[in-house]
Image (cartoon, rainbow, N blue to C red):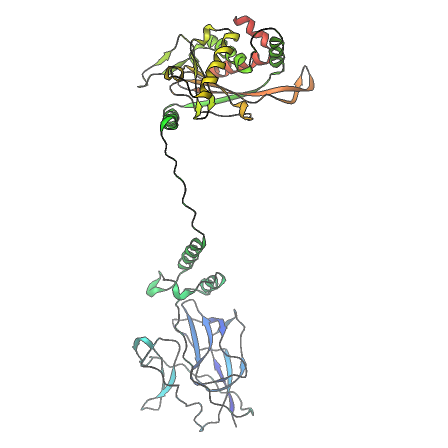
Length: 441
């Protein structure tokens, strides 16, 4: 009659006290051969397949996947043929001369009657050799009647991948990573957590489709000149920006009144240009530029007012020469002429150079604010946002007013915040109370 033998978890070496069940390789009722791997377990050192020294029918398994089994605790019980039948002394199935190390091997008798375990080695490793220490087969359970034991085919196990901990192997499983393709950076090729993380990252990058080749637009002509000038300005000028909201309702009303009279129409830009020239007369420090070697500040006697204009070739800054000598109507006429020339692409080099101050009306693009780069070597620029109806406290009551945002960017080398703030506040006062301009005429 067959007897049931219990196979405990053997001592896996190096002081390890237990191992985690990674994968069961047999089911209850399976017929196994001597030295057939029955379970894959993981220790803090590596993952190994544990072979059972008995051949027969598996009658029980102990431990679920993920559960830690202490050394010496039962792994499986196997119903084997009774002593003397040769079933438990049956040699392992023949293997090639060279196979990788997978488990504890079969029992082989030596001349002294002792049994030593032999490890199988793979086709690319060293020839098989005896292992120094034998693993006890564990206590024999009480015999129970079972059916006859059928012979099982020989099983050749796969190679072991050395991993530092169960968490690392689980991480690889969660990401669908084949550890056999990972190069370990630990001692003797031990796979560390960082190795798995690196492999997962590389796999993720490999899955990202390559971006289509980008078009490269040559930077030449006017676009190149603008780029070089703005880069130099950003690199050399320590610019600062301040801003304020202003109620432009009265300014718009005055413009409407002027345009009801006979003569050329007055634009908002012309009114703002006239306010700027009046402000620069009060704050002449802002109509200046710093010498190229940084040795001094050049104060300009004339105001050559540049203004931003959009053309088919890009943004250009035409210059109104001697703007401080022109009245509002004259400023409007010159602004209109230069704007038309910019659109036609007929501006001359003289009309595009020599500015001392710039007015930037970015409200025409439907935006409220900006922090522009100064037009090198100028020291200041006034920006004007769109004029739109907004809630506003007027004369102590909430009302809908025409509001705009004014921003002022300046070279901090030519003045401090007090001067810049004074100029911006003067401009805002003129926008809110256009009659203030009469004091400057």
